[in-house]
Image (cartoon, rainbow, N blue to C red; front, top):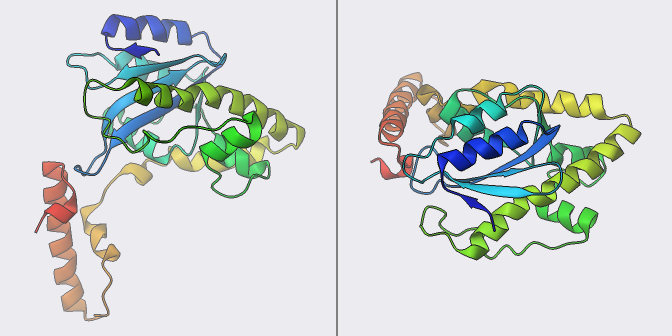
Length: 238
């Protein structure tokens, strides 16, 4: 169990990982109470199957070396289904890690089905199962349990092995260009921006009257703005 809680440890780890050809990344967060997901734990893995968990809620901890690592174009960043992870990172840094590899897209290209789960890839490719009993625990509560940290670390230690296996299959099938094209969508920062004046489109209504729709648009936008400002779920804004 490797849990990092000090800025000096982060700097040392990032110096070590800066020599890797690829690193694996995952996050644990809570979204239920907030408009923007709250990052509680950040996991990093190297190409050899080692993993580290960083306590992002530790007071005064400096995550800037990690963000610099994410921006290093010489290091491939491996995720599984990274949409939510990237949104969190973008909200914190206003940057998208580059370059990216998504094992879910790679799994699809390798014939494992659409939106294949991480657990399924671990089971098929590594003949291993993941204990998901702590998956939906409250990651903001401290201290973290040993079971939680072990679960979180497996999201990056297994990921390195899965990446190597999938990358090998993709190269053999000459599908690397297709993978690259699919991953390009994650660099579109509009995916992670919230326009309050688009919120009304999520409301189901049979009213087609322009005046009614304009009022609905303004009410929804106001609600969205308050939720963003207070960083709370919009369902809590009446």
